[in-house]
Length: 467
Image (tube, rainbow, N blue to C red; front, side, top):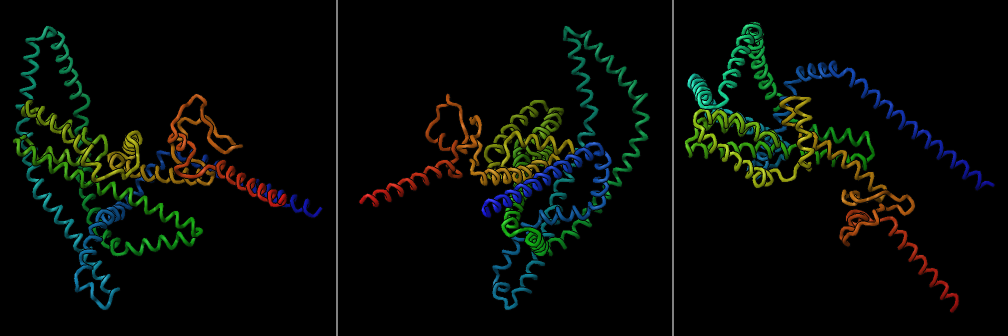
């Protein structure tokens, strides 16, 4: 009786725990659904509030970004200085380490300013000359376009249709100038004023951000230690270890992609400038800057930079425009198949579909910055979801690879194995992949081994008894 009562109590306790757990899950789902509905109906107000918050914290965010980009440079200088005998053989290691850190931060800031100054000194005058040349040649461009239309009109059998389209276009242009252009001039003046203010705001954020980045770099190790301290204080050691590992891996994904993409784009821009200069291509520096900057955007970047560059060069010389188009296609093929994989590797772990999805989603929500950062941010989210799913499957002793699930029909709860269509004819390797032998051993196989071992022991005991 006592055993039965204990079992009933345990069953009651388990059922109570199960009810509480299910209630917590239901409450969590309801809360998440309520938050989602609230965000959906209040998205404009929330977006405005987030934008205001970001504008207020823009100097701090700029400082953190600068510190994050310069941290590898600081660590490089730090390793270089610690190899010197003056610092290596010091009797006060703590003070020496702090001194080396400060010197490395100063060296990184000087290096960044020097790089920006050299690039500005080389690029800005060339850009100004290129833009001035475009403005000076603009009347000739319009005249060439007019002559081309006139030539097309005189020789084409559809000359009347072309003339009608041109007249309609001119009428539309006059109507637009009267009804839309003149009222927009006043708006344009206000926009220009706001643009000037935004430029001053940008330089203010950059200056204050540079100062903040120095303090962030000086306290980077302290911030990291504090984050770990809080993590281990709030969670169990195993959970905290997993969170630290995940954070470290996310940092590798994000930092590796950003630094690798910057290096890759700089190399592409430099190669483009050298080749265009050798073949005497017009606007070589301007086009190279456009190609290099837009190459930072994954997937769509090369096309975004190539289109205006081809148009710009073709206005000067159509033959050179075609040559540039062929060159940029070859350059992007080399970048996509050789240079990019060597520098970036598979740092994101995303398929081409998810790359396009991340760019479109980031660009649609956050504009140009979203197109730049959409891929690494989505790669981090993808890794977090993937880690959670694999951990859940591991606890259930199910395969972690995707291949076993592609041709699976269902999951048998009795045998605890994936069931496949009977018509499938698979190789031995594919069967091993399906049943998860790459990642974890099937529960059914473990049970069979245990049953065989138990059966052998029983048979051995029977033989001993008979003897």
